[in-house]
Image 1: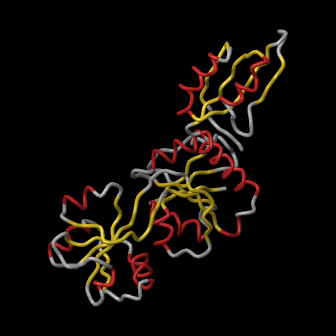
Image 2: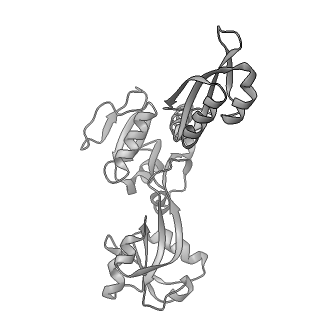
Length: 282
């Protein structure tokens, strides 16, 4: 099975890190190589431009792909399925226009010009608004086009909006919310190996921001302790070789650990141990 991943750019390193934490780490292959083995002998990584990955998957060069939703939508590939939001690389595709201009809504662009690196998504957006501007595809520096009279507005990617503000552009509307996704060709979505990869990646996401809490506590205080750490479906309670004492294990939110530890001590808990969780299958 081949997984297409970005060969460079801001989501390259986070993607390889996620695969590694999911137990599918790249074992060999330099960045300039097209393929790389992983620790799973049945899985190969295919390096490609983020924008090309949907086409690689759609055409069968790869079975799975990891890239931004914006790239999948812009590719127009109609035989791929979005399997999992990987929760990084978050950004927005927005309609923006000069701050001192007269463009305040998509409807104001009827018969005008919009510059973008995402012509397909932009056309779909304006079609949904029943507005028909002239859409000009550019390959970079999109935010400059209104200031050199190439366009009346732009559709561009933004994370914080800083670049738009620096270039005296205001956000008129949100076109698309995007993040990095795992997607597959439709004819392989039921493949057990695809399901295995999806489960592995989901387990890393599920473990994020959680901690495993273990402690010993008086059995008579168990109700109060369960109130402090309900865990996922309730804590696990185990007998120990000490009369009146039980062991309690639970998964808790990292943000709750500080307060929970102090509350547990007040309820007589001892031997409190907090550990990180690498993967969590729910």
